[in-house]
Amino acid sequence: MYLSILMLPLLGSVVSGLLGRKIGVTGSHIITITCLIITSILSIIAFYEVGVCDSPVSIHITSWVNSEFLNISWGFLFDSLTVSMLIPVLFISTLVHLYSTNYMAEDPAKCFGTTFFGFKLPNSGDNLKLMVPSYSRKVISGWSNDSGTVTSHKMIENEMGYRGSKSSVFKLNNPLIATGVKEQRVDGNWCINPKLMHLRCTLMGFERNYQIKIPSKQLNVKNFSTFNNSSQIKPWFLTGFIDAEGSFSIIIDRNKARNLDWRVQAKFQLGLHKRDLSLLLQLQQFLGGIGSIHINPILNKVNYSIDSNKHLMKLVTHLDKYPLLTQKANDFKMFKEVVILMSNKAHLSIGGLNQIINLKASINLGLSDLLKLEFKDFSSIEKQIINTNNIPDPNWISGFVTGEGNFDVLVTRQSSNKIGSRVQLRFRISQHARDIRLMEYLIKYLGSGKIYKYSEKPAVVLTIFKFSDINNKIIPFFEQNPLLGVKLFDYLDWCKVAKLMNNGSHLTQEGLNKILDIKSRMNTGRDSTNI
Image 1 (cartoon, one colour):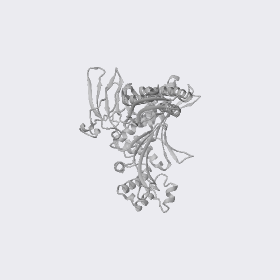
Image 2 (cartoon, one colour; image 1 turned 60 degrees about the vertical axis):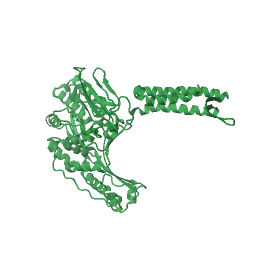
Image 3 (cartoon, one colour; image 1 turned 120 degrees about the horizontal axis):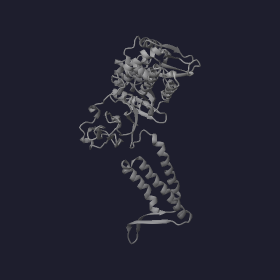
Image 4 (cartoon, one colour; image 1 turned 120 degrees about the vertical axis):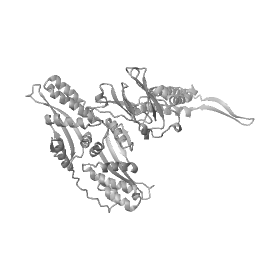
């Protein structure tokens, strides 16, 4: 029994550590926790025998030194102090294991058997799914089709080791015919459905045996779209999306390890709900895989950030060629100057640091109270008004609406209506009041809409209610210039309601119920199971 107290936790650790891939996560949980629970029970018995009954136990293992005058042997001694410590240590360990099993269930950094959640593409029928990894360490990521008719994988190289696999896709109409493809940086095995498709991943060998170190240079990534044209990220789409959701920030904080005691960092960020992880992965790939993506499971947020000066220059090059249209272009202009100063190592001199302080004072909310106290002689740079005279490309609107647009279905009481309810569609784009001129150009470009000002905050909203304009202008526009991300699915549900209204279904109780069901799964009511 006493040896079991020592060996059971070790056994659980060895089995789950060495055989974890074979027994799976659930098996590892069961074995480790069971071993700890049994050990805890045995420790109570040992406490009674040794501590309460005052019967110390000594277990002789082997002799080490055995001479005429000195005898030293290896063994275990269970006295009252030992057994009194066993109970709190083992019980706390058991509780920690039980707690962490549930607590770590949503941790994106863990890697276990099934490492995917799926989004169903709207042009796929019931089977086509976009599989996106839960951003685990060293896992497969990319596109996969449940029916086995379309398969394409892409990988986040910064997060994976140099590993490889061979994937086999068995066709439904002829299970004897399989298409194989070799991949790198893959870990584990995955089976979607024994009757549909098997994707088996096996290691190819040591890293030194690989022909290339950057596998994405060989990838033939296929693009999928709900519409006739490709859903590939367009340059102007990215600019529009940055106009909507991007932020440029300069971080300056104390760091005694630096020559001037100040650390300077330029950072670009895009923050979205975790449902839009797939969109951020596409944007990252469009930019050549630069930057990093972090998931916050507690806040249900996903953040794409770029803070390397070398990588930021790539973003700067893009935005120089495809410039921002909102007043955010002012922040970018100063942000760009800081990036160039840092590329030239100017931030390592007091003169360069002061220049950056003056630029930071004009970006976003300006300087913190601490920086104002430390750099009293700063002078902020006056921002220029960005005068947008036209919309250079329709894909800018698609990107901007993907970030700032709303597709609403309004159902209100109306006694004069036969079924007592009125259904309306509404398209909205909200923006800060300083960009009202840009909103006016959007109305000209789309050929519809009115601008309303909020009384309680400095913001405006472009709104389109007119059903004929929605049918004849808005829907055709986004068919030709598709949205991306979760907003695409809100738009498609919105189009379903428009179709029902065109058929007059909104005037019947059955049609109204369908509309209410669609409405309940849109916008904030949508989760990954509705995609």
